[in-house]
Image (cartoon, rainbow, N blue to C red; front, side, top):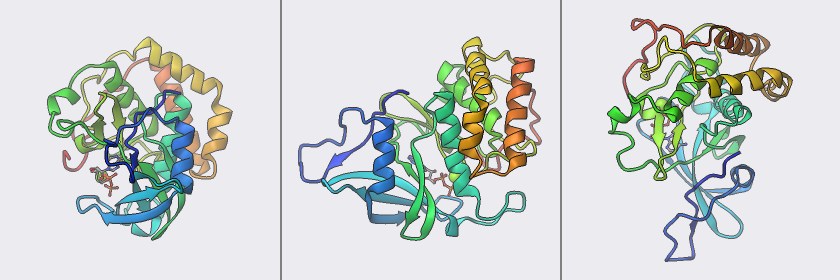
Length: 258
Ligand SMILES: Nc1ncnc2c1ncn2[C@@H]1O[C@H](COP(=O)(O)OP(=O)(O)O)[C@@H](O)[C@H]1O
Ligand SMILES: [Mg+2]
């Protein structure tokens, strides 16, 4: 598992520019689970009640995170109520089991507005959101995100949900609309449509399939049985065809580019 390059500020150190040596993924998870919520601000452009929060460790370190309480989820006609925060976490689990490190470390815990997902904040590079041409390129790190969306059945891959941090690393965020049992892929990333999947990524998929029991066990508390079966059905089909499916512009584009 790659180490993370994170924004961790030492509140007492005026020279701290916020960039510390890499923090292991496990340390990040522990921080997300155990640190205190010390500030919280509603993000006005989220589709749900999504908060930017400050987490403070006993040693004074601070970390920004994104908190999505179950109670703040807007009801949807096609996803069961009160399950989006679990889908955020399930997406993190999938990314972790694939070894792709695409979804920032995420936990489920109690917060100021009740139970929800808490995800590490990834500071985007200044041009991350505006550089639409970047996200149209055929780069390996973008292909991984595309394949991840096919596997997770992501219904909401907008440009604003694709991040690049200051080191150039690609991240995906906002995975509440994932793992539906029926095909729901909606994405702005169309450059690989119909193409063969890269051999290295197929090998990762095959490995995931061989270790299916581990991921199934991890997902069981968070998704229902039919959703987990559908997930492994998608993995089987992608491995069988070896190609990205053709998409339909009337069905497979998210509502709103951003
Ligand atoms: N892990 C993250 N790191 C950095 N910014 C994030 C992260 N998660 C969310 N955001 C920011 O918060 C905004 C709202 O979050 P999003 O996940 O889209 O919530 P919603 O489910 O309400 O649509 C995003 O557009 C992005 O600007
Ligand atoms: Mg969103």
